[in-house]
Amino acid sequence: MNRKNFFGLMGLALAATLHASPLLAQAYPAAKPITYIYPYAAGSSPDSVARAIGQEAGKRIGQTILHENRPGAGGRIGFEALMRAPADGYTVGMFTNGLGVYQPLIEPKLYVEPGKDYTPVVWTIDSPQVLAIRPNAPFRDIKGLIAYARANPGKLNGSSPGLGTGGHLGVVLMALAVGADITHVPYKGTAPAITAVMSGEVDMTLTDSGAKPLIDTGKLLGIGHGAEQRWSYFPDMPTFGEAGLIGVRMVTWLGIVAPPNMPRDVLLRLNRAYNEAINSPEVRAKIEGLGQLVKGGTPEEFAAVIRGDLKTFGPVIRSANIKLE
Image (cartoon, rainbow, N blue to C red; front, side, top):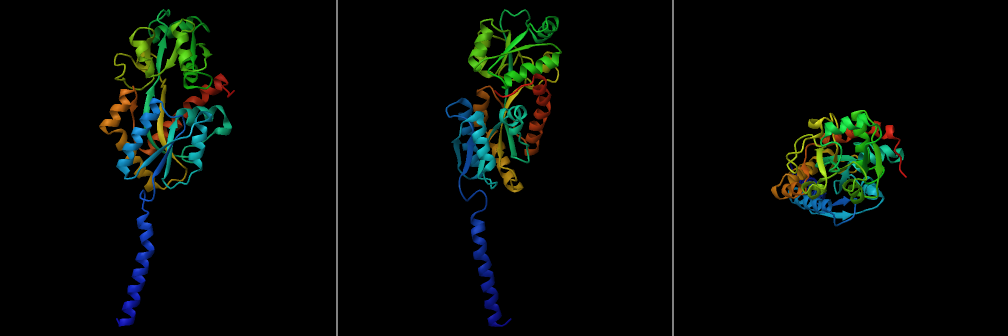
């Protein structure tokens, strides 16, 4: 090789290196912080848990994750902002079955399809729903409730925080499961729905781990919960399946999603970081201390959970003719 050709090849190699260096410098996730959209207001226990998970996931992935509250329209404002964001891995957000299942099924114009309109990243938390009854109810367990409902059509009633909520759908799902009429009584929020049970105004409600002090002190009687396995928060309480409500799973789940068309390598980096975060000792203790269950898994497993709930609650919503007000 002559001197001219040698230096010509060296020049081409140097140019290729200089051209590639910005790409190497921008390798995910080095370019900038990751924004995590939390579609509800700040200050709640779920908000603090989301912040803890994000901080830990940022350490695992090697980039800061900025927690951004975008409340409004039942979480829809934040979720729609997420769906419009670039699919580059620098925007993710919290997702619930309220956003991903209940709202889309109740209002068709809000329908979103996992894998098409957004990318499931990882299923993070389950918050089991507890079936709580008034202490002086004419039954003491779920088998007694089923027998009472069948013998007294329409007489059994259940409160919820409002139309279209998980509590509302749970009452309808139970009625379908036991083959009996159960009257739904909507209230404006969780607190009045629970108060109505304690006062004897209604017979039962579906609530979460926040009702533990009321159950522990006997102001409510917890007779079952909607997780698939026993729950350390209420170790002596049976699952719905164990108690006789076969095939009824009632939880509020939370997960991480990203914009549609997420590159596979970026998706797997995020999935791994969030799985490691929720299973870290400090974060796991925080989640379980609030009476919630750590989940995790692959993006495909989370997508299967979402699709499973869409299949379950579609008939529930149609049977009750539930519509947004």
